[in-house]
Length: 107
Image: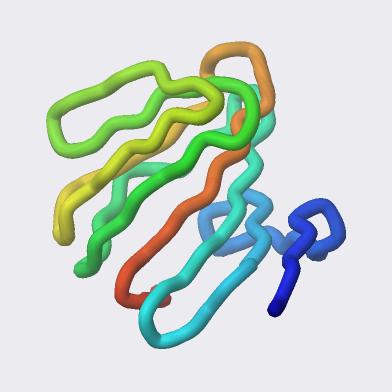
């Protein structure tokens, strides 16, 4: 058994300028915690694998393809491969979520 305590994982600033914590990176899946402060955003991009987001804390706006929605704690949002996605901490709160890619994929 491996217990990962998110609060104990050291975050790093990624190439998009946001703090990320890599929690799991194996061939089948990659799980990253991303924590956006109010005003932060992950700009539009796409990846060639399945992605879903699980909102851990706060709220923000997520755009998948042509659809946008404000999401809150405990929401799960799916994104098919090669679909444009973007996330914004635009609700005056911290916006923390898990980004899960399957299979694992890195830029």
